[in-house]
Image 1: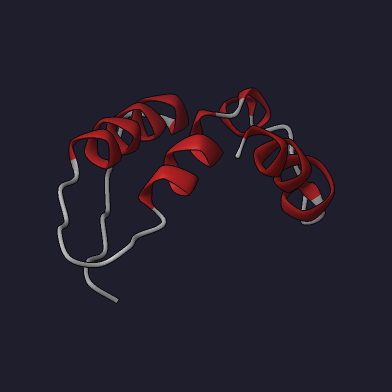
Image 2: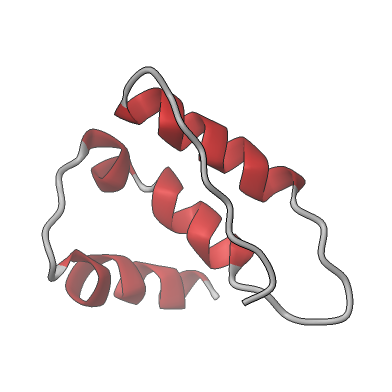
Length: 69
């Protein structure tokens, strides 16, 4: 682990927006990170709405993410 980013907000939406900004502004050189993946994940409309369960990543998000790649 290179870094751990923790954000707080007045509510879930505020915290997600702060995390989006933190990931967007993140600069790490010399190694690959999963920051782009994390940014895409927390920018997903289902995640923002809180409309997901434990199967969301494998069944819904990853297939869409892999198509985009």
